[in-house]
Length: 85
Image 1 (tube, one colour):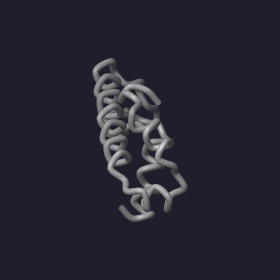
Image 2 (cartoon, helix red, strand yellow):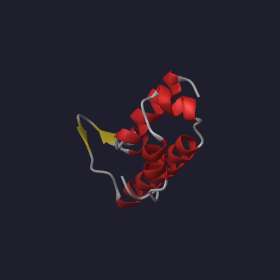
Image 3 (cartoon, rainbow, N blue to C red):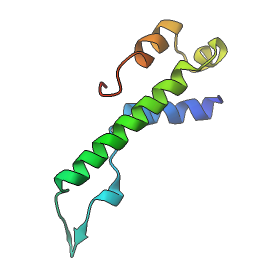
């Protein structure tokens, strides 16, 4: 994994991103998302978090060193359940 890919991975894990495609707009204002849209958004966030943690767990020692992480840092983060930040 390249340093650029790792920075993207870190950015993805650090932010609680939303999926704008799920939010409907009418006129000049944005309607609040429906319950179904919020559930889908949460499921997508959980899926992304689990995926990035699996990628993090697969790093080599050299890749960890390249991005300034120790083996224990990676172990702690990658062992978290998908629903935890």
